Image (cartoon, rainbow, N blue to C red; front, side, top):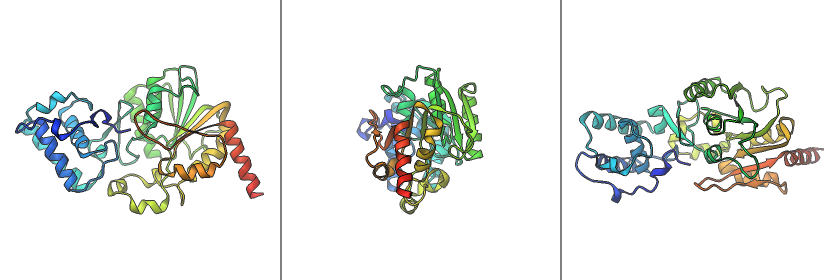
Length: 317
């Protein structure tokens, strides 16, 4: 789900083209980014969305600012700042979130830097709206977020669902430092615990009602064909072996020891979803649909994880 999803319906024909206005600058900036061949997939889907994000950052507007703002005249200072930001975006090919130091996820702002991936995931919809009918987030539940990165999923869950207690785990100390900044920003330190852990390794015998993860799922060979923008993100958060399933296998293998009897495992697998479905074979799993777009998210209960592990043992026996 894009950070500025509310802007996804913007068309250049809808914007005021008055000289010196926000609308005129947005159209011109979008055309410049399209001509430069930039890739949009780190919070926005189109050049217009990205230009509008630049405007919201420089003018201090909400990311879903009202269309009437496009008629606003731009001051010389704002024009200069916007021009510099646009130039940096084109010259460096860095995702805009890194250039502005912030991204939006599930309607909430988060500090970001190049130690973690830019927040973008259909799991934002679950963090905000819940996981009914499978799990009631209004109950006292214990949740584990594996590969928390900036902490956006864990923190959004804690903000929207006060009954949840969340362990946010990551193997990267730099990522956990950033996540700590975001935990403090959103005032959820009492319910989000940061843990340095390589998947389950640092968690002891803790058990959870829900284990969720947006893990690395890019096959090594696919890295060569990704747009340049991805080169600025940490490979640790993207690459997962030859088939993209290295971390997924580890999540499945350890899930039975870390789930409660009725616990659930929820994993986003993106482009590796087809390979993951083939790996699971006939095991009972639910592939989720999302109202606001997104795919490749699978939900399994503890018995399904046990069945998978048993089949793996039988194949290697």
